[in-house]
Length: 163
Image 1 (cartoon, rainbow, N blue to C red):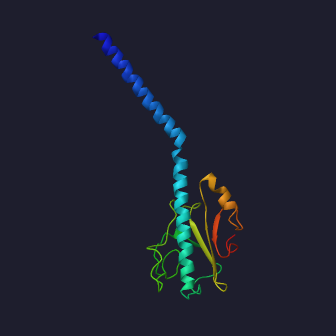
Image 2 (cartoon, rainbow, N blue to C red):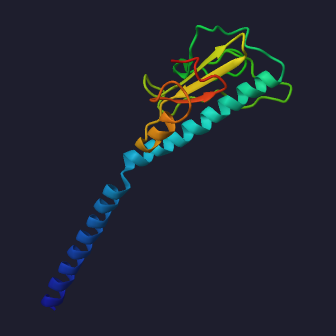
Image 3 (cartoon, one colour):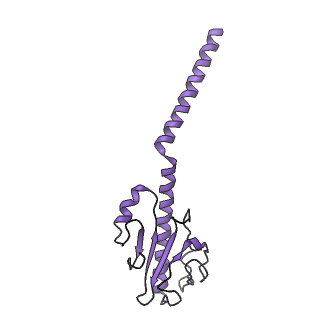
């Protein structure tokens, strides 16, 4: 009887050790910080695409950027998500086809490094949207986006507006 209890205790501790080992191995292999960076980058890419589509629809609706300034960089650091002219991109996005989104996107971290920027060329009716991507696997995406800054992901119809 005593031997059975001793064997049971040894098996119990062996199983606990294996489970702990598997958990540690999973955490090392999964790299949760890298996984979170990838998820945030996916959100950034989706947000930048939404902003780009909204600006294209804005122009297609017969509007222009007269209420904006060539010298101004509009940043999500402002935090205002209003789409009626009081958001971080101060345009009224209520179009004849409706509102392209329910609020201006804000970067998942929205800090001094990770945020969205929009700039326009008023006379040419062109724009550029920039954001930093975290995941090292996105470095090639930033370097090869045809923009003028290899450290930033750039989209729009004039990628020379922002430096």
